[in-house]
Amino acid sequence: MAISPENIEELLHLVPNLLEDEGWQIGHECSAGKLLKQRCPWGGHLVRLSCQNIPVSNLGDRSIFVRPEARSWLLGNRPELNEECYEVVKQLGAGEALVMRDGDVYTRFFKLCNVFFSSKQKDGEEDATSLAFLFPTGKDIVHNIVRHNYPEIGDSVLLGRSHTRNYFGFAHARRQTEPGLVSISLTLTAPTVADWVSVPFQSVITSARALFDWYVNRPGMEEMRRLDQQFYVVLAIHSWPRGRPFLPVLEPSTEDVTEVTTIDAGRRQGLAFWVRYHPRMVGSSNFLLSEYLMLFLEKLGEHVDVYQSLEGQALQHYQCVVPDHEWQRVKDRFYRAYTLQKSAYRRANGGQSAPGMSEHAEPRFRTDQGLCLQRLYRPVPTTPRSPALVVHNTFLELEEPEEPEEPEELGTGAFKRTRSMSASPRSFHSKLILAT
Image (tube, rainbow, N blue to C red):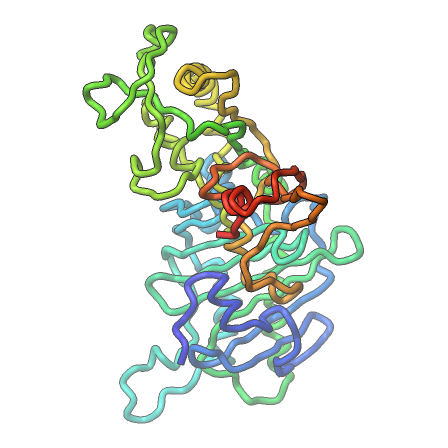
């Protein structure tokens, strides 16, 4: 028997037909929606409640579900809207958090589920909980993951699982052809599914539809979606062909460094001494912008949440995301210091080029850490990506990444430009692009 999944990737690996009807048995279908069921790989059953033509007020081009951090931030400022007492306890990444919330607002729906999806305790059995449909009640900490444009553009998915009780739910929302209408499905685990006549199941489907309607049209949802759409800023570092960027140090003697670059213009700010950044400074082996930026800001006495992933997908090492309200707080101080970093980089390496930083970049995701769900819709190559190669006389044309990268980490970005180089085996081998 498989182990209960802890994230969306594991869930889709165990249940590859999660969003398809094939392989599911229809328990009941009515005008409100339909109930489907199948065996669960980690025990019991999976029940999927699916409803179409659910109207969403003023949706526009915004996401259907809202990330937990955006929701918590707005509800903290609008407590009159916080029916669930919803609050982020620990942020795990962009769109992923442990949240405290009151599950009693869902009681009506889940009590119906408990009637149809629980087994009666047999005589002599001591463990009744293993036979009951477990559902959230009272205040509890839940692991929430929300992703936008997943698995298709315009879609939203939400995974909620408890750390204290063995239950989880997976919701998927998709826009329909007619503007303002969406379809929503909710998949739950259950010990069993009652083998009764189908009529009683209609009450569960009708209750699920009412729950979906309330969830996406609650008071404040339009404001939450607007905030969620602008919650993060994508940062990208570029133009660093002569090695990694630099970091400020307080005093050369207090740092374990081999070479220090002095910038007199930074003495007034306490930023006169600079050293080249190395990933081992944060216990890593490869450069990640999130780690570099976080350490850079710590040197300035600032703490900011910086993430290397967005929507559960790993960003390229030269990109990261920061909550926009936090970035606005520190960006002026950062750029003043970063200008000195550029001076240190040029002084140490010579020339005019120096690493720049851009905001609101288009997210670039690692191709070697793609989402399992993509395999349901398009083929995913299993072999490493090799460079496109065209031979013209004695020259090879190799694709180059759109953003400059370090030699050891080339090959995981989007490719657009080409350049020519000597076709000698030695030069080709030194520039070979590998998908890591």
